[in-house]
Amino acid sequence: MRALIYVQHLLGIGHLARVSRIAAALERARIEVTLISGGTPVAGFPKEGVRLVQLPPIRSRDMSFSELVDAEGHALSDEFKAMRRDRLIAEFDALEPDILIVEAFPFGRRQMRFELLPLLRHARAARCAPLIASSVRDILQENRKPGRAEETLGFLRDFFDLVLVHGDPNFARIEDTFPLATQLADRLVYTGLVAGEAANSPERFDVVVSAGGGVVGRKLVEAAAGAAASFMAQWPRWCIITGPHFPAAVRAALEATLPSGVVLETFRPDFPGLLGNARLSISQAGYNTVCDILRARCRAILVPFAEGGETEQSDRAYRLRALGIAAVVREDQLTPESLIEAIKQVPSPSSHRINLEGAAQTARILLDRLAARQVGT
Image (spheres, rainbow, N blue to C red):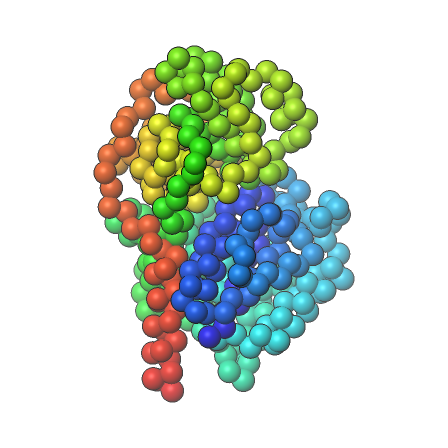
């Protein structure tokens, strides 16, 4: 069995991290995986053993996602787009996959239609057309544009056999943020959240602060650094993980002012294990970080990213607060002082039964669907 997975991260690394977990689970299920990434390369993703095809990178110029640029910051030319499109189709033809997984699209990543629609049309017309699945998280960004949901539904009906919703319906249902999902009952399936496996780390920190990829985490990192001194007697060891895209100049200035006992890191491959050892996690409310927090069952303060009208992280954070799993500090109210108050009042985590086995379940679902297809033919 061969699977081709497409992922395009534009700002953070969350999409790539989640897909990398799925790719590893498919490999464990003895499915040969090729992961095509269209974003900036990130060390450690995917894990060894998964074949990576790196397209010439595309990223968002800023947090508005209104303009895409290449690795040098130039606007995308028609020639550049055509080159990426042709490379995608060539990889598909060379692999002849049994499964094609497209991450986010058509619920998101509409900016990539110039290459995804030709790929999907080509795959549908192939001599042995693959099972085509859309891979999407459980909570979507609120959509304010008229007609966008109907367009998404049309793409799903035209090109996709399956919609893999990476969530637990007892926690969040996709129709809460995409009401037309009720019309997809014949092809929509929940996998559980795609959490990493339980992990250990030889190092122990009392507090672990993380800012995802680091592009939008400056305010969180600075507030945590400012709050740390107030808790050194109680929690003397802090690890602040900035993410690989945190501004270098800001990092250097911050490092010079940190109190003793606070360690500044760029990336920790043992992050889930650090959370398992920690007394407190302070982070944004991105999908993958929340999955790691739920797996570790540690105390948590969430500061959901909400700039530019973003709603997805806030939705997730407040659902977790309602379950007694985390405290929430709004991004526009974040200061060292507000964080200090939140730390003083953070609840002990309540038990939960949220399904975190989405990676392995995704592999089982795909294998079952392929088997059913073969019986049907």
